[in-house]
Length: 230
Image (cartoon, rainbow, N blue to C red; front, top):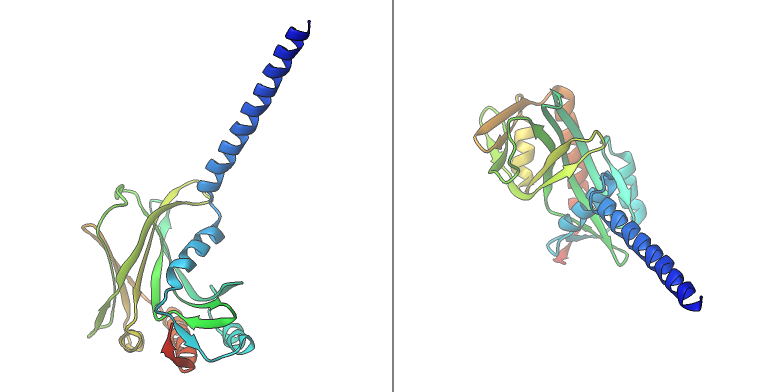
């Protein structure tokens, strides 16, 4: 009888252990496939907070005033960074849609604030007849006379809340003066190249105003950059 009881207890404990292991595995799968946009942003932030960032000689309240006074809709604040962002959208169906942004970051480390030197263009896209995410990608902003090609630094796939899988991309430039010169032009276009496909979008009057605001916010912070680089 005692032997049977021991066997029964062993079976029960084994079942419980298997159940716990299954729950842990399910949780990890769910975590890895998380659709939470904030987690994506946090990963992105670590990439943009580089050792090349420049220390800003401003206190928190001064940075927050610039951030709060900003005209940009996509601004976001976390413990470790301030994001200045102008979001924009293109496409009318899930078969060809772009959820895009221009942004830059101010990061916080040990109570000090650092301006990332890059203005970033990126976002999610889904084009039905482009299946392979490992394709060549380019981004250029253009006026009638000038053009500026950004450098690519992020390229991956992400799942979204609508159940679809989108490719994520991001490009960056440190040539802020040339970028500003183009944005001030009468006609401004952005060109995204995905493999052999080119997508060219005009920027509207309001969108150009938002880009002006982004550059203005950046330069307010750039004016306060300290001489020493971190």
